[in-house]
Length: 70
Image (tube, rainbow, N blue to C red):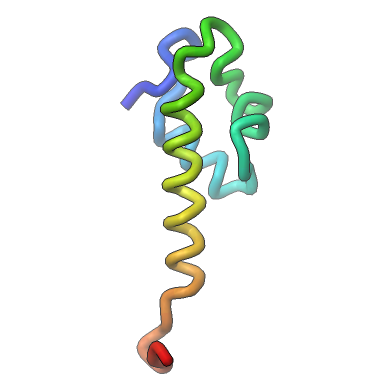
């Protein structure tokens, strides 16, 4: 889905950048130029960033089959 129509940036592109180390809107803006034209995509971009960071943390904390939740 397109997040930034002005720059043609998709949610997948934002997720990929987060997986490569971007952790905030400013990181994504610098890498993909999101929000540098009209700025109406900022809230949507921040939502995708937050979701992706949260998913990454969940999978890092998820126990393996050899461990169990305490």
